[in-house]
Image (cartoon, rainbow, N blue to C red; front, side):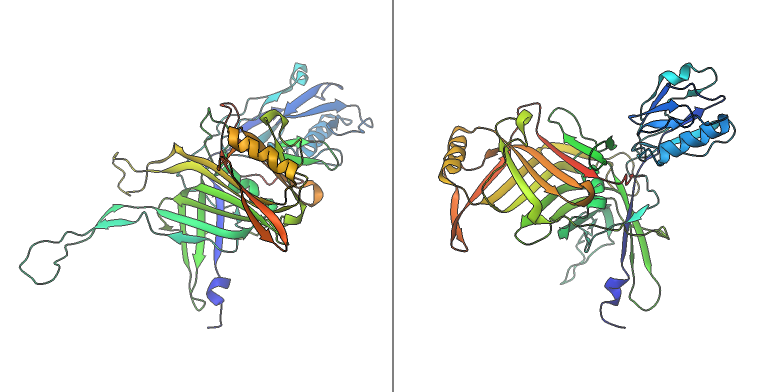
Length: 453
């Protein structure tokens, strides 16, 4: 067997758990020009044939068949319209077309004055639900270098009966708990799958919005409110191992979520990510075939910037003008498996439960500060003043990551001052704070939809 064959044959892939919602779009006659349909947050305005010249416009064509075809093309992305961020449209079968949500449990809004056209209508989205712990088929491979699995939640009990022997007399083993833990560290951030990791850590059920700009992008906003349960998405993970010679070990585990996620920047490096999570026990199951990795772009640290302001409303307004040597950010989701007694014969945890005491955000900045800025932050530390900090990383094609948080300095009066390359550097350590309305959010822009179905 050649070296590294086992690692080369490994597969890790995933799919978000739940059921997508659907709606039925009915077109029995040509829509009236200037009528509108709003679906998935995007407004579509019908225009006479030949009059389409802007985004959001749909030609009614010469007959009802052309109107149907043009509407489906507009929702799925055509010459004038970007792909709808929340729904996809199937081809019409007769007068009806099925609209399908791009995220499980999602019920995107469908409204529009165009339904005043007699015979044309659209039903509400129904049938969608989150189904935590219900295993699903994977939809893509995970772009990650190394995913480590542990057995901390696999516990058995073996009694030691008194049997008159000069050694332990162990009885038969009885499993008392099942589950698994996983972790990854120092991994490159892949723009094309970052929304997956954020949906299973910061907040779930997030559908991107289409943002018109230069260029146009899709925007995911993951908000961790101090007043609401974030309901993260759960994933089914599939893995394949091989000895490199013959046969495979194919397994899957359900209800995978993150308990921690972190990002780090260092000079002359790409943006890196780490995390810890949990899932139910692995079981034998054939993995989903014919899946591929995304064409990945990595985040580059050199185009990272940091902003420091006094309030959440002003966040991202004041650039920390001094040179940023590096930063490390870790977010604790507060989620953990909850094991209870309700007749689960598989001995897995029943559900994931948030613990407010474990929700935390820690940020360390290593910077070159001038005396004025140092004095400002020193005063804020001494007074316990909240600092609204945004860490921003840009990529190509409109890719953009903004990590917003409210913090307080962890040290009341002194920052660590060190030396690097002949320069005095300052290490500022900050920990989570809140104004009881705002706390933490991550905004991700990307030129493609990358739906979580």
